[in-house]
Length: 122
Length: 163
Image (cartoon, rainbow over all chains, first blue to last red; front, top):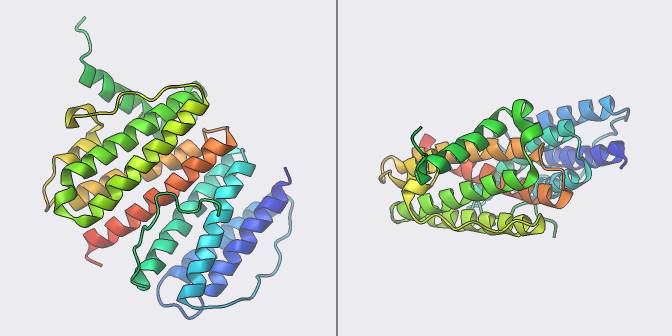
Protein backbone atom coordinates (compact mmCIF):
# COMPACT_ATOMS: atom_id res chain seq x y z
CA UNK A 1 0.00 0.00 0.00
CA UNK A 2 1.36 3.41 -0.99
CA UNK A 3 0.67 5.39 2.19
CA UNK A 4 1.80 8.63 0.55
CA UNK A 5 -0.67 8.20 -2.30
CA UNK A 6 -3.56 7.50 0.08
CA UNK A 7 -2.71 10.51 2.26
CA UNK A 8 -2.28 12.70 -0.82
CA UNK A 9 -5.77 11.76 -1.95
CA UNK A 10 -7.16 12.62 1.50
CA UNK A 11 -5.34 15.95 1.38
CA UNK A 12 -6.59 16.78 -2.12
CA UNK A 13 -10.18 16.02 -1.10
CA UNK A 14 -9.91 18.12 2.06
CA UNK A 15 -8.22 21.02 0.26
CA UNK A 16 -11.23 20.99 -2.07
CA UNK A 17 -13.52 21.21 0.97
CA UNK A 18 -11.64 24.20 2.41
CA UNK A 19 -11.65 25.98 -0.95
CA UNK A 20 -15.38 25.33 -1.51
CA UNK A 21 -16.25 27.01 1.81
CA UNK A 22 -15.02 30.36 0.43
CA UNK A 23 -17.77 32.90 1.07
CA UNK A 24 -19.81 30.49 3.20
CA UNK A 25 -20.60 32.01 6.64
CA UNK A 26 -19.65 30.06 9.74
CA UNK A 27 -16.74 27.98 10.98
CA UNK A 28 -16.69 25.52 8.08
CA UNK A 29 -13.65 26.89 6.29
CA UNK A 30 -11.56 27.21 9.46
CA UNK A 31 -12.48 23.67 10.45
CA UNK A 32 -11.61 22.32 7.00
CA UNK A 33 -8.28 24.20 6.99
CA UNK A 34 -7.39 22.56 10.32
CA UNK A 35 -8.02 19.18 8.69
CA UNK A 36 -5.79 20.23 5.76
CA UNK A 37 -3.02 21.17 8.21
CA UNK A 38 -3.23 17.78 9.95
CA UNK A 39 -3.10 15.93 6.64
CA UNK A 40 -0.15 18.00 5.36
CA UNK A 41 1.76 17.11 8.51
CA UNK A 42 0.88 13.41 8.21
CA UNK A 43 1.95 13.40 4.57
CA UNK A 44 5.28 15.06 5.40
CA UNK A 45 5.82 12.55 8.23
CA UNK A 46 5.24 9.77 5.70
CA UNK A 47 7.91 11.25 3.42
CA UNK A 48 5.56 12.91 0.95
CA UNK A 49 5.24 16.48 -0.26
CA UNK A 50 1.90 18.31 -0.11
CA UNK A 51 0.76 19.73 -3.43
CA UNK A 52 -1.09 22.99 -4.07
CA UNK A 53 -4.81 23.08 -3.40
CA UNK A 54 -7.10 22.46 -6.39
CA UNK A 55 -9.53 25.18 -7.42
CA UNK A 56 -13.23 24.59 -7.99
CA UNK A 57 -16.75 25.80 -7.32
CA UNK A 58 -17.54 27.62 -4.07
CA UNK A 59 -20.66 28.11 -1.99
CA UNK A 60 -22.91 26.00 0.21
CA UNK A 61 -23.82 23.39 -2.43
CA UNK A 62 -20.20 23.08 -3.55
CA UNK A 63 -19.03 22.75 0.05
CA UNK A 64 -21.64 20.04 0.66
CA UNK A 65 -20.52 18.08 -2.41
CA UNK A 66 -16.89 18.48 -1.35
CA UNK A 67 -17.58 17.33 2.25
CA UNK A 68 -19.46 14.29 0.93
CA UNK A 69 -16.64 13.41 -1.47
CA UNK A 70 -14.04 13.85 1.29
CA UNK A 71 -16.07 11.66 3.66
CA UNK A 72 -16.24 8.89 1.05
CA UNK A 73 -12.48 9.19 0.51
CA UNK A 74 -11.79 8.95 4.28
CA UNK A 75 -14.02 5.88 4.68
CA UNK A 76 -12.30 4.20 1.72
CA UNK A 77 -8.90 5.05 3.21
CA UNK A 78 -9.84 3.24 6.43
CA UNK A 79 -9.91 0.09 4.31
CA UNK A 80 -6.48 0.89 2.89
CA UNK A 81 -4.53 1.98 5.99
CA UNK A 82 -4.46 -0.42 8.92
CA UNK A 83 -1.85 1.41 11.00
CA UNK A 84 -3.42 2.66 14.24
CA UNK A 85 -2.00 6.18 13.90
CA UNK A 86 -3.51 6.59 10.43
CA UNK A 87 -6.81 5.10 11.60
CA UNK A 88 -6.88 7.67 14.43
CA UNK A 89 -6.22 10.45 11.94
CA UNK A 90 -8.97 9.15 9.65
CA UNK A 91 -11.43 8.75 12.55
CA UNK A 92 -11.01 12.45 13.35
CA UNK A 93 -11.42 13.43 9.71
CA UNK A 94 -14.54 11.27 9.35
CA UNK A 95 -16.09 12.78 12.48
CA UNK A 96 -15.53 16.33 11.26
CA UNK A 97 -16.47 15.77 7.60
CA UNK A 98 -19.70 14.02 8.63
CA UNK A 99 -20.59 16.85 11.01
CA UNK A 100 -19.73 19.37 8.28
CA UNK A 101 -22.06 17.58 5.89
CA UNK A 102 -24.90 17.71 8.43
CA UNK A 103 -24.33 21.40 9.17
CA UNK A 104 -24.50 22.24 5.46
CA UNK A 105 -27.62 20.13 4.97
CA UNK A 106 -29.22 22.11 7.81
CA UNK A 107 -28.30 25.39 6.07
CA UNK A 108 -29.97 24.04 2.93
CA UNK A 109 -33.03 23.08 5.03
CA UNK A 110 -32.66 19.39 4.16
CA UNK A 111 -32.67 16.47 6.63
CA UNK A 112 -29.38 16.70 8.51
CA UNK A 113 -28.90 12.93 8.82
CA UNK A 114 -30.60 11.44 5.77
CA UNK A 115 -28.74 8.10 5.78
CA UNK A 116 -27.62 5.56 8.37
CA UNK A 117 -24.29 5.04 6.56
CA UNK A 118 -22.91 8.40 5.36
CA UNK A 119 -19.67 8.12 3.43
CA UNK A 120 -20.51 4.71 2.04
CA UNK A 121 -18.99 4.16 -1.42
CA UNK A 122 -21.43 4.99 -4.23
CA UNK B 1 -19.66 -15.80 46.36
CA UNK B 2 -22.96 -14.36 45.10
CA UNK B 3 -23.63 -15.38 41.46
CA UNK B 4 -23.94 -12.59 38.89
CA UNK B 5 -27.47 -11.83 37.72
CA UNK B 6 -28.12 -11.60 33.97
CA UNK B 7 -28.42 -7.84 34.31
CA UNK B 8 -25.14 -7.59 36.22
CA UNK B 9 -23.41 -9.78 33.67
CA UNK B 10 -24.68 -7.60 30.80
CA UNK B 11 -23.62 -4.46 32.60
CA UNK B 12 -20.21 -5.98 33.30
CA UNK B 13 -19.79 -6.87 29.64
CA UNK B 14 -20.72 -3.36 28.59
CA UNK B 15 -18.34 -1.88 31.13
CA UNK B 16 -15.54 -4.10 29.86
CA UNK B 17 -16.17 -2.95 26.30
CA UNK B 18 -16.25 0.67 27.37
CA UNK B 19 -13.06 0.25 29.38
CA UNK B 20 -11.25 -1.38 26.48
CA UNK B 21 -12.31 1.27 24.01
CA UNK B 22 -11.94 4.32 26.21
CA UNK B 23 -8.43 3.14 27.14
CA UNK B 24 -7.43 1.28 23.97
CA UNK B 25 -3.72 1.17 24.72
CA UNK B 26 -4.38 -0.85 27.87
CA UNK B 27 -6.73 -3.44 26.53
CA UNK B 28 -6.40 -3.53 22.76
CA UNK B 29 -4.22 -6.62 22.80
CA UNK B 30 -6.84 -8.60 24.65
CA UNK B 31 -9.74 -7.50 22.49
CA UNK B 32 -10.56 -9.78 19.60
CA UNK B 33 -12.48 -8.53 16.60
CA UNK B 34 -15.56 -10.70 17.26
CA UNK B 35 -15.79 -9.60 20.88
CA UNK B 36 -15.49 -5.98 19.83
CA UNK B 37 -18.24 -6.41 17.24
CA UNK B 38 -20.50 -8.09 19.79
CA UNK B 39 -20.03 -5.15 22.12
CA UNK B 40 -20.82 -2.65 19.37
CA UNK B 41 -23.91 -4.65 18.36
CA UNK B 42 -25.15 -4.56 21.96
CA UNK B 43 -24.61 -0.80 22.14
CA UNK B 44 -26.50 -0.22 18.87
CA UNK B 45 -29.38 -2.44 19.97
CA UNK B 46 -29.46 -0.65 23.30
CA UNK B 47 -29.50 2.75 21.58
CA UNK B 48 -32.29 1.66 19.23
CA UNK B 49 -34.38 0.39 22.12
CA UNK B 50 -33.78 3.60 24.06
CA UNK B 51 -34.79 5.82 21.13
CA UNK B 52 -37.87 3.63 20.70
CA UNK B 53 -38.91 4.38 24.28
CA UNK B 54 -38.69 8.17 23.74
CA UNK B 55 -39.80 8.24 20.08
CA UNK B 56 -43.13 9.83 21.02
CA UNK B 57 -41.34 12.91 22.39
CA UNK B 58 -39.55 14.02 19.20
CA UNK B 59 -39.74 12.88 15.54
CA UNK B 60 -35.92 13.03 15.42
CA UNK B 61 -35.78 10.04 17.75
CA UNK B 62 -37.81 7.99 15.26
CA UNK B 63 -35.09 8.60 12.66
CA UNK B 64 -32.31 7.82 15.13
CA UNK B 65 -34.07 4.63 16.27
CA UNK B 66 -34.07 3.46 12.65
CA UNK B 67 -30.43 4.38 12.10
CA UNK B 68 -29.29 2.49 15.20
CA UNK B 69 -31.29 -0.57 14.12
CA UNK B 70 -29.65 -0.35 10.67
CA UNK B 71 -26.22 -0.11 12.31
CA UNK B 72 -26.97 -3.17 14.44
CA UNK B 73 -28.05 -5.11 11.34
CA UNK B 74 -24.83 -4.16 9.53
CA UNK B 75 -22.75 -5.25 12.52
CA UNK B 76 -24.71 -8.51 12.67
CA UNK B 77 -23.64 -9.14 9.07
CA UNK B 78 -20.01 -8.60 10.05
CA UNK B 79 -20.50 -10.89 13.06
CA UNK B 80 -21.62 -13.61 10.68
CA UNK B 81 -18.56 -12.92 8.53
CA UNK B 82 -16.28 -13.71 11.48
CA UNK B 83 -18.29 -16.85 12.28
CA UNK B 84 -20.37 -15.54 15.18
CA UNK B 85 -24.12 -15.61 15.54
CA UNK B 86 -26.32 -12.69 16.54
CA UNK B 87 -27.35 -12.72 20.22
CA UNK B 88 -30.96 -12.43 21.31
CA UNK B 89 -31.99 -8.77 20.99
CA UNK B 90 -32.68 -6.95 24.27
CA UNK B 91 -36.37 -6.61 25.05
CA UNK B 92 -36.24 -4.64 28.27
CA UNK B 93 -34.57 -1.42 29.31
CA UNK B 94 -32.98 -3.30 32.21
CA UNK B 95 -30.94 -5.30 29.66
CA UNK B 96 -29.21 -2.37 27.98
CA UNK B 97 -26.17 -0.24 28.90
CA UNK B 98 -26.49 2.46 31.52
CA UNK B 99 -26.25 5.45 29.14
CA UNK B 100 -28.94 4.07 26.83
CA UNK B 101 -31.07 3.17 29.85
CA UNK B 102 -30.84 6.76 31.04
CA UNK B 103 -32.25 7.90 27.68
CA UNK B 104 -34.94 5.22 27.69
CA UNK B 105 -36.13 6.35 31.13
CA UNK B 106 -36.04 10.08 30.28
CA UNK B 107 -38.97 12.36 29.54
CA UNK B 108 -39.51 14.97 26.85
CA UNK B 109 -37.55 17.55 28.85
CA UNK B 110 -34.51 15.41 29.66
CA UNK B 111 -34.38 13.21 26.54
CA UNK B 112 -32.31 15.57 24.32
CA UNK B 113 -29.50 15.78 26.90
CA UNK B 114 -29.63 12.02 27.50
CA UNK B 115 -29.49 11.38 23.74
CA UNK B 116 -26.56 13.79 23.43
CA UNK B 117 -24.66 11.88 26.14
CA UNK B 118 -25.40 8.59 24.37
CA UNK B 119 -24.20 9.83 20.98
CA UNK B 120 -21.04 11.34 22.52
CA UNK B 121 -20.25 7.94 23.97
CA UNK B 122 -20.95 6.14 20.69
CA UNK B 123 -18.69 8.52 18.75
CA UNK B 124 -15.88 7.85 21.23
CA UNK B 125 -16.47 4.09 21.10
CA UNK B 126 -16.33 3.98 17.29
CA UNK B 127 -13.33 6.31 17.08
CA UNK B 128 -11.41 3.92 19.31
CA UNK B 129 -12.84 0.83 17.61
CA UNK B 130 -11.45 1.99 14.26
CA UNK B 131 -7.91 1.50 15.53
CA UNK B 132 -8.72 -2.04 16.76
CA UNK B 133 -10.45 -3.56 13.71
CA UNK B 134 -7.88 -5.19 11.40
CA UNK B 135 -10.31 -6.39 8.73
CA UNK B 136 -10.64 -3.64 6.13
CA UNK B 137 -14.30 -4.29 5.25
CA UNK B 138 -15.37 -4.41 8.90
CA UNK B 139 -13.37 -1.26 9.61
CA UNK B 140 -15.05 0.57 6.72
CA UNK B 141 -18.48 -0.44 8.05
CA UNK B 142 -17.48 0.93 11.46
CA UNK B 143 -16.22 4.11 9.75
CA UNK B 144 -19.59 4.83 8.12
CA UNK B 145 -21.34 4.18 11.45
CA UNK B 146 -18.90 6.59 13.13
CA UNK B 147 -19.89 9.17 10.49
CA UNK B 148 -23.56 8.56 11.28
CA UNK B 149 -23.13 9.01 15.04
CA UNK B 150 -21.08 12.16 14.38
CA UNK B 151 -24.06 13.55 12.49
CA UNK B 152 -26.47 12.56 15.27
CA UNK B 153 -24.17 14.28 17.75
CA UNK B 154 -24.06 17.54 15.77
CA UNK B 155 -27.85 17.61 15.43
CA UNK B 156 -28.36 16.99 19.16
CA UNK B 157 -25.69 19.53 20.13
CA UNK B 158 -27.49 22.18 18.12
CA UNK B 159 -30.84 21.15 19.56
CA UNK B 160 -29.63 21.26 23.17
CA UNK B 161 -27.75 24.55 22.53
CA UNK B 162 -30.97 25.98 21.10
CA UNK B 163 -29.17 26.75 17.85
